[in-house]
Amino acid sequence: MTLPSLGVFLFFSLVATTGGAATTGTANPQRALLTRIDTLYAGRDDRRVLDQQRRFLDEQVASAPKDYEVLWRAARLYFWLGDDPSLSSDDRSKLGKTGWDLAERAVVVAPDRPEGHYWAAVNIGTYALGLGVVRALAAGLESKFKEQLGRAEALAPDYNHGGVGVAWGRFYEKLPWPKRDRAKAEQALRRVLTQQYPNNLRARVFLADTLAHSGRAAEAKVLLDEVAAAPLGRYDAAEEHRAKALGDGLRDAVTKMLK
Image 1 (cartoon, helix red, strand yellow):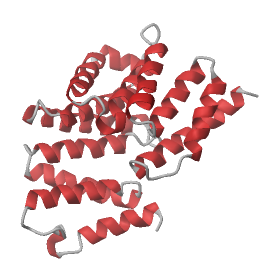
Image 2 (image 1 turned 180 degrees about the vertical axis):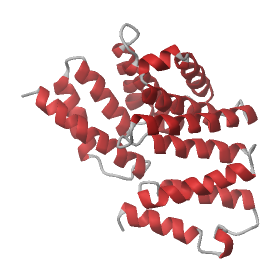
Image 3 (image 1 turned 60 degrees about the horizontal axis):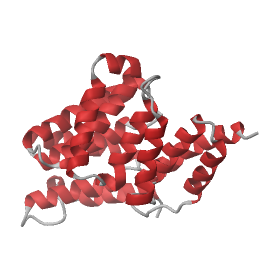
């Protein structure tokens, strides 16, 4: 079964009961709800399922506006939506802002949990990139990003398969000169790959990007070849698939650099 057909199967199998109730039973409705959300999220690689997921989570947030577990999961989905490179900068920025707002609400409910802080930070990043880095800095988003990601790191340094370090690496790479610090970007991304999650494909792609911009295209090409050859399903198939797509685009550019 391909990933897209799996996503459709997951969605419709979970909403097949009367009124769309989860099929995991009603003994613990909250657990059943979260299981349903997480199962749908695992199938997010299928675009036909994303709209249903978004509507479903929007409904859950509206009905339980202070439910931490629902809020951070909604922020997680909005990050995924805004992270889509095929969207316009304006659309990505709007989705990032929605995800940031949801994550901030989660932080208010449970400030000592890492999920809200992490998804707030990465959604701020999406929002900022959509605005443009100079405008984002003028709006004070740098300090907000660092505050949220720093708090997530203090609570759970390897959260989301090393996602905290990946976010730091991209932050230092994307800052405009003279704030940009490619040495710190490389350090953060290598820490993920050597100390936390060696299989993290996005960390490899982002490290390759930093190396390529540092005049080290041959090293970047090795990393991107590893990404292209990596099997799917080691930790998060949808995320791995997106990282591979990002890597393919960068690989073409790096190959041209080497000619």
